[in-house]
Length: 247
Ligand SMILES: Cc1cc2nc3c(=O)[nH]c(=O)nc-3n(C[C@H](O)[C@H](O)[C@H](O)COP(=O)(O)O)c2cc1C
Figure 1 (cartoon, rainbow, N blue to C red):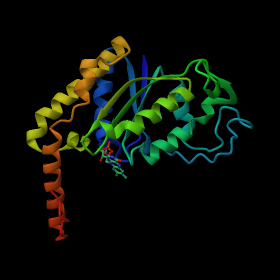
Figure 2: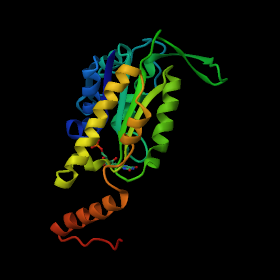
Figure 3: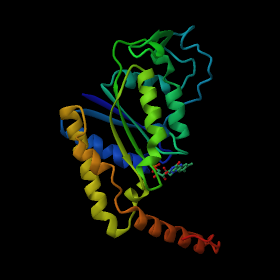
Figure 4: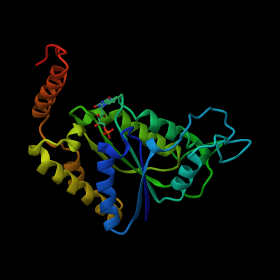
């Protein structure tokens, strides 16, 4: 199984998203997969210009000369792609959205009706990779991923694929925290990410047990909020900036 992960965090190799993907891929490799993480922040990806030339004058190819041609090749030759992005304004990052827009050449412009009576574009390729979604966000609470989940589901169906596994970590900034007391929690979470990779390669899914563990924040939300607010107060105090009233 060939798995390619696309990480859309502007923090690239220093991102929480990167930690999540690395651990997941490590598990996947242990179970025999061939895996790669691509950091989109290191790639040149221009904005889609909406010219539709990838559908007419150069079918299947974008006219922009940048790294996207290589990335399209990586997508279409993978069995599974990991769409990995931190949550930005309830959605994907700008980097990741550019990347998503630029996958348009992978489908043919003609319309078709699917088995549910919904419309989409016709396939250009025989086989499309399955999708795993990995994300983390700053706020506590899994409900923050509502719109992101739906976006990826809709995007997957439009591209003749499906979301086969999802990992969402809220209060995600703790993953890179140097605070000693968090260390065992971070280690445990990483182990579960790696286990998810093994399970995914062996069974094509992440077990419910592991999924539930991966959806739990490292520490309870109330404790996280209290400590995070203290952290912001300290950071502002260093610069003599008064903090607003908060609980
Ligand atoms: C511009 C911007 C928008 C953000 N929007 C959200 C948001 O809507 N909800 C949320 O919970 N966190 C939000 N965050 C917080 C990030 O999701 C969080 O910092 C995350 O841990 C970053 O992950 P990374 O290290 O993988 O980039 C936002 C951060 C930035 C910089």
